[in-house]
Image 1: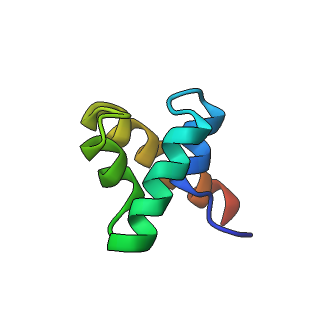
Image 2: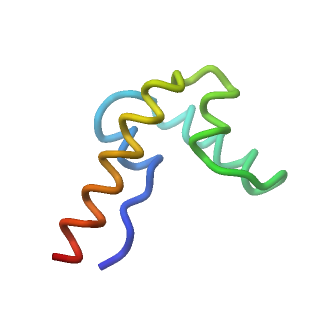
Length: 66
């Protein structure tokens, strides 16, 4: 099973909108970096939201591998 993408998880849960994700993905494509950090730097999410959803992402990976 494919690893759940952080941006998609944030979008699914209403933490960001598609435009914010698209902008962050464009930055990632052009400059590199981690999507979560890019979203924090753009002010789309807080560090607390990033940590929360990194945990959600990790749980999904763990559950998928069980």
